[in-house]
Length: 611
Figure 1 (cartoon, helix red, strand yellow):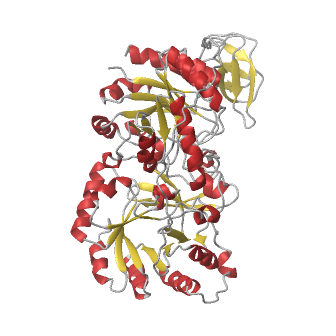
Figure 2: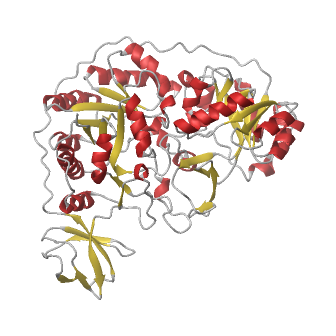
C-alpha cells in the first residue's frame, strides 16, 4: 500500500495548492493552539469550509493543536478540539501525551496523532490511545523500521529542520521570551554564533530515499512548510506524488525545481547519517546557476526572461532578468564576483483549482468532561534535591545533608557513590534521549543498583520502573495539572503566576543551576557558543547528545521563599558547587535573612511569562 502524502496548509491558497496537486492529506492550524502561530492559519468558521472542500476531493484534514497548554487554557483547548470534531477533521495533532485519555473520553471516535514535539524516541514511549506517532527527525532508518512495526508512523521527508530535538528546545523561550513549545519560535538557531551560522540547518530532502522509506513501512510522508508559499506547496506535492506513484530514478529537472521553490541546501538527514547544518547563510538559496567573475556569468543552468535571480554578495540583491540563456552561455552582469542563484522560474505553474466556498458552521454541543483537578497540598517540610556530577560533589552534598541526591546512572562509579551516601536519599538520573536498546540497558542497571528512586529523563522509562519512586525531569514539559504525574520538575517556561494557579503542589521547582536550552544529535565542535551580544552558551556532551546551556545560571535566591509560600516544598539545585548553594538555600528557606544582591548579578531569576 502506498504511503500517504501529507502537505502543509498555512492558508487557503496553500490548502488549494496541496489538494489540487497530489496531496492525500493536509495538516493545518487554527488561530490558536498550534505550533505555527505566525502562519496565516484558519478561523473557526473557515474550518468547516476547508474540510468540506478537501473531503469532496478525497483529501483528509488533520488539525494541529500541538502546543503545550496552560491550566487557564484547558477549557478553550478542548473547545478547539470540539470544533475540529464538529467540522469532521480526520485527526487532531497534539504535543502532550497526558491529554490523550481526556480527549478519548470526550471524543472516542476522533483520531489522535502525536506530534514530533512529544519526543517519542523509543517504542516504550508510545502512549496508549495514540493512533499515529510523528517520529523525531533524528531517528535512524533502522529505528524508523522498528517503530513502523508496532505503530502507525509519520515522518518528515522534506522541508526545514530543527537543530534541537523537537519538544526539547527552550532557547527561544528562555533567551527571547517567545516559546517554540507554544508556537512562537524566534529561530535562535538561525543566528550567528562564533562568527558563523553554527546552528543553521539545511533543508530535508528525502526524494531519492523514498523507496527505502516505503520499505521501512512508514504510513505517512510529511512535507514541512506551513509558512511557505502556494508555489512551494503545489510544486513539492506534484514532485513527491510522481515518485511515490512511480518509483524511478530522480530527474535532475525535478530536483532543480525543488531547489527553486525553497532550499537552504539539501540533506537526507540523520536517517541516512548526514550532517544537517550549513554555516554559510540561513536563508533560501534557490538553484545555483554559476559564479560571476570579472562581471560575467557563465551559466550552469538555463534561464528565461522573467526568471528571478539572487546575487550573493554581503548585501544580497535579487531581481527579474530580461534575458535568456542556456548552460555554457556567458551573460554580462557587471556585478561583483559572487555566486548567483535562480530563485523564481516562469515555468513554475501551480494549479490552485476551484475557490473554496463558504459554508455555515455547525458545532456539535459536546458536554466536555475534564479530569477533576482537586487541590493537592504538599505537607512535607521544604527539601533540597541536588544533582551531582561526580563523586566529590555527591559526598559534599551528602555531608551538608541534601535531602536527596541525583546521580548519573551511566557513570561507572555510580554503585560506589551509592554506598558512600549516608544522610541523603540516593536517586539516579537518566538521559533524556534514549532508543530501545539504551532504555533496556538503563532499566537493567537501575534494577541491579536498586536506588531509592529515579529522576526520569525519558518517557519510555516510566512503564519499566513501576517499583521505584519516580521524579520527572523538566524534559517532560509539565505545564498543567493534568500533566502532573509522579513528581515532576515543573516546566521552567511557566511564570510565577501560572505556577501559583496549579492546584497540585506536589511538584519540584528548578531553583538554581544551569538550564538546558537545547538537546541535539548534531555534533558541536566548539566548547561554547558566543552570540553577537557576547553571551556565552556552554556546550556539554551527555552520553552522545550535545546540550547547550543558558548563558547565565538560574538563581532564585530569596525569591524561593515566594514559591514556598505557594505550597511548593521541593527545590531542585543543579550545580557543580552543591556545598555552597545547599547552605544558602537551607538558610533562605528556613527564614533566615540573606543578602543576595551580589549573587543575583551573575544569575537569571527565570519564571517570567513566555507567550
